[in-house]
Image 1 (cartoon, rainbow, N blue to C red):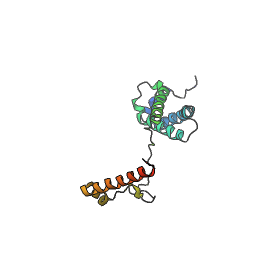
Image 2 (image 1 turned 180 degrees about the vertical axis):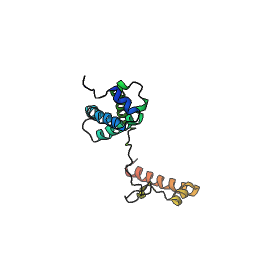
Image 3 (image 1 turned 120 degrees about the horizontal axis):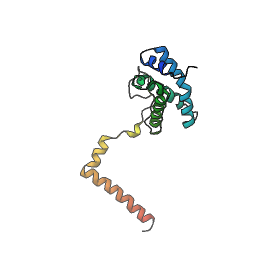
Image 4 (image 1 turned 135 degrees about the vertical axis):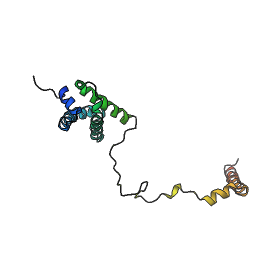
Length: 151
């Protein structure tokens, strides 16, 4: 009888620490997972990441598999969880792409000054005199508009 791709004995060997057996199972799962993701989201660049993340998930939780004969079902459930995270917007790559030598929160872009607030100007507007000046300017603009439109 020919050996199946997911022979329960081979799965047990992988669960018992045989790295060669584990790697062989993961290699055989890769094209199945790739086809699953391509069929659902197309040939996007995210397919590679989804496949890799699913294989990592399977690798890390293979010891939790109770029925070694149901490895494919176990793998497809892991793929489904990855796909759900992807569609719900909770998907992120497991691999960090930032340079660890750069400080966090820094950008190479010039600093955006539009978000800065002039504290002195803001506090001045909050004083009674500042509030009066702001209202006076708004009223002047309103009167000019009323005069312009003949109202």
